[in-house]
Structure formats: structure tokens, C-alpha cells
Amino acid sequence: MPAVLIGIVATALLAVVFEVTLWRPMRSRGAALPQLLLMTVGLAFLIRNGIQLVAGTESRAFHIDVITTVQFWGLRIGRVQLLDVVVGFATLIAVGLLIRYSKLGKEMRAVSDDAALAETTGIDTQRVAIATWILGGGLAALAGVLYASALGAMTPNLGFSLILALFAAAVPRRRRQRVRRARGRDHHRPFAGMVDAPLRLALESRPSASRCSS
Image (cartoon, rainbow, N blue to C red; front, side):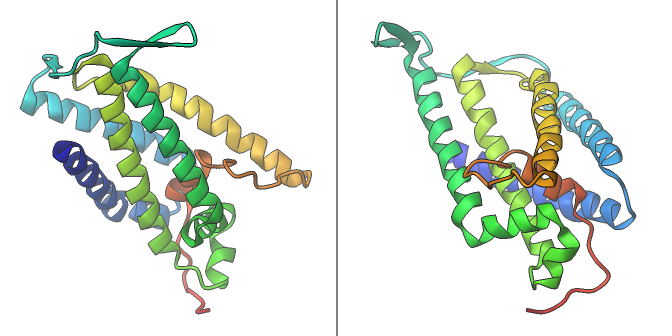
């Protein structure tokens, strides 16, 4: 458990470092979403190859019992996999409620919709962007832990096959959400935008020249 918490905190801090040193300067220079997505993929390759250079490419097994199973409702599932599913669903619900009902979540949705307009209402968009990266980095670390524990082993290339699926899920959904907004049919459901709003906020929000105080 301590190693998991350390990994989550370290990944969240690394995400903030990338925001301050890479994404924020690029957004201030007017970089569009396609350029930022390409930079994201390139950075992923750089990190992955750096890990392989330092730690090697061999698979590392965990001391986890991935054989023991539990049975319910006529289904059989691994005990570790079941725990991963429970933690995943609990995290999904918690994040959805955070974005739906908390002050930070409302600010994230406002900045995601229109960063300039959000600033005129007194929202500190830079603070919201930092909070978004902390949340996103921590969730990414937790997802990596759950995925690796379900497999019982890991390599530096773990999760690489999921990147295209993640983009395929996030980008088209953003387009559908824009169409719903244009037609006046976006009812802000509790979990709507939970994936694409942080992505859009982190990669597209551009700082304005001035910030209005509330």
C-alpha cells in the first residue's frame, strides 16, 4: 500500500511538472489540440524508452495471487481482478460526483466549456488546470496499479495498447457533446464529460492576457 500511494503522488507531481514546463508554455503560444496530442504521444515514447534505458525491458512479476478465484451468480473471477473491478467502480463514482457536485468540479466544467468566459467570472484557470493535472496524474497511476495487479506482472510497455482506445473514446465523445450543446440537449448528467472535460481542459485551455477578479 505505501508503494501505491508513493506512485500515485509521484505521478501526480510529474504531471504538474509537465503542465508548468511543457503544456502551459505551448498553450500560451497558441498550440492547437492536434499539436498537443502529438506532443503527448511523443512524450509517452520518451518516458517509456527512458524507463527501459534505466530499468531494462524485462518483465517484472509481483508477489500477487492471481490464481485464486471466487464464484458468485454462476460466474468465476479472480480475487485480485474482482478487487480491481470494485476499486475501479468506486473511483469512477467518486470522480463523477466530484466533477458534478464539488466547487472544483464545477470550475473544471466551466473552464472546459469556455476558459475566457470562466476567467471573467473570477475562476483562476491556472489553478484549475493544475488541479486537473494532479487528479489526472493520480488516476493514471491508480489505473496502472490496477492493470498491473490484474496481470500479476508489468513491463515498461504496459498499457501502450490502451492509448489508441482512450483517444478513440475521448475525442468522438467530445464531438457528440458539442452537438448536444448546440441543440440544447446537454443536460449535464452526473458522469457526462468525466473523461473528455479534463482532457479538453488540460490540453486546450489558453490563458487570457488578463484575469478579472470576482
